Image (cartoon, rainbow, N blue to C red; front, top):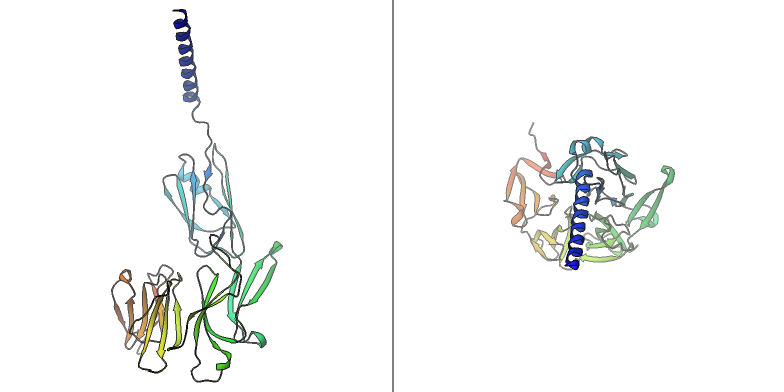
Length: 329
């Protein structure tokens, strides 16, 4: 009985301690401070294709207070939306090249949030015209240094035996697709123009491997067909090429080539064309108007837009087209 009484006293003491602890928590409330976490752009380098960041909170927070208190320096305008306790900030203007941005959010009765991200340096490519650069593809990287000083780093990508005629840059900036012919073909009526890819040494996607510059691969040969104009979709997944058979000029068509290397002729001729940003449809100038041609089941229905002459550009989301229309007067 004595042992039982001792056990009862121990149980009673434990219960009273738990009641006291629970009462203390209920009286004082949750003491964990409110804080921002999981900032999606923390320490990242962003480009024009990165158009929103997210920021989560560890507990419910006053949304209106956050929306009025959030500051980005230098200023970078955008719109705020919410999904539960996660904030999404969608940019309405493009970031400035080579800048360090800081996101600040003072939190009442919590931990102030400070996050940082960067925009990548400005880079551009061109075809040289002077001396050893003539007909060669060149990349320039403008590096932003301290005190707003800039350094120009120029790299000649293509070898001297190729004459580059046109090029387009892949979305990540790590590769360029270009057309070129052998310099020994200069002076011929129809030089055999082939398509190649080459690495730039740049990479605007930190999640992928950065390859050294100048690695060249042939993408499309000119054994059977002459390759003329081409267009690469903004997402880099679809290519359209104007091709003519060397031995049969009547065999002329636009060809569609996917990123897995599969190619097929469209059976449509045209020397003015453009792919939508997602590569799902092509717009081709035809006699009397412009044809919109779906390239897969997600490309919608075929259309013909009379009185238009050609397309100049798509909007970034592909929903709008900038076109030239003929006016008889």
